[in-house]
Amino acid sequence: MSTTTSPATPAAAPETPAAPRSNQIMREILGGSAAISVLAVVLALVAGGILIILTDERVAETSGYFFARPGDTLGAAWQAVSGAYTALFRGSVFNYETDRGFAIAIRPLLETLTFATPLIAAGLGVALAFRVGLFNIGGRGQMLIAAAAAGYVGAYIPMPPVLHLVVALVVGIIGGALWGGIVGLLKARTGAHEVIVTIMLNYIAFYLVSFLLRTPGALQAPGQNNPKSGPILESAQYPSLLGPQYNLDLGFILVIVATIYVWYLLNRSAMGFQFRAVGENPHAAQVAGINVKSVYVKVMLIAGALVGLAGVQQVLGTFTGGFAAGLDAGIGFDAITVALLGRSKPWGVFFAGILFGALKAGSFTMQSAEGIPVDIVLVVQSFIVLFIAAPPLVRAIFRLPTPDGSFQWRAPKLARKAEVSK
Image (cartoon, rainbow, N blue to C red; front, side):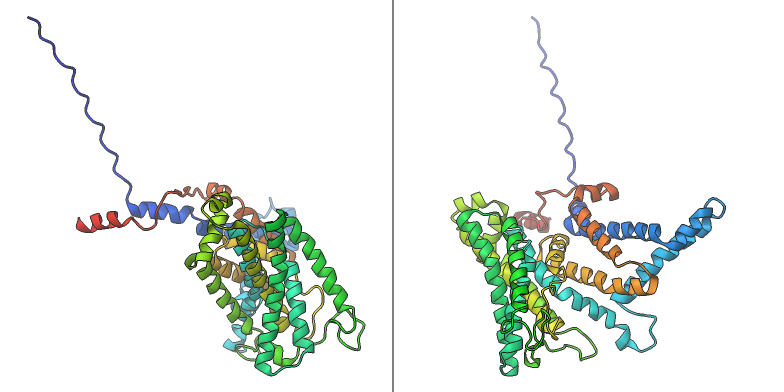
């Protein structure tokens, strides 16, 4: 009688222990958007330093005998870069070389906030449109229309002090909102691409405001031939926050309020949920019952109002002696960079605007103290956009991990209870 033996059951493979949650959190932080933004700025500053070295006269002179005395070239390169960025710090944060007291030494920081104020407002408008999937590059036109509306009220319609400021501010914001709302309406009703529409509206706004500034009885100041408006009445000007020795005014408080509003709108309101849903997938949002066309109109109205706030800032806070057609000073396009650096998040845009305000404020000190062209700052801004638009490049340079899209920052409720029970 033969006996059969059953084959041995293979041993189960040992389970791989899950990685600690702290490691997963660190991976998300190092590979996340915030780290990419910071490192993009670092890389842009490094690229700017290389350009400073290549354009410095002392470096060019010492490089002629580099192989004989390389230390001279390296020392000149270090002095050029360190001198430029030290001057940038003195001109944008704190002037530690002055002997006129703390009030003068801290003035560069307040100048940074002053330059950042319209950038933040316009950046919020661009970022809000980004969150809905719209590319709002009509900041220039929205700023000009808002500035023209607020400037007309502020210069030619006398009112009591507080009321005058409020009316000029509201009228300017409404002007920017209506100019942005045209884009949303055309997008919703005709399907017109917002990029084409905003570009065309920029030209229309520029030439319309230029015409009004050359027309007596419209925006042109009485008794002059220059295309410039009359001075803003004192009752409609933004009051200074810290006294007449500083340029920081009420506009900075308004952009803080605007940042809080956009954060609440996107993260705590039903309208914000609709905005984010349409931004993720407009077809799925429409199937879920969201009126996508209505969302396009609403978001462009709000975005235009936010960008319009930047135009009002230029008229009632910066160019109170009268404004010309070039008052936007490139802010409408710089706002796109600010929104990209801030990852279209309200507080990210806020701090990105402060960074760009610092670059603009410090560039003048770089030029006057070290002879560095202001264009170097524009190159740094361009490199920031380049690296922000290429996160895999930044991760490859710094060997950062790729974040896990399914990672949850807060563990599910059942998992937390099980952890507590252990």
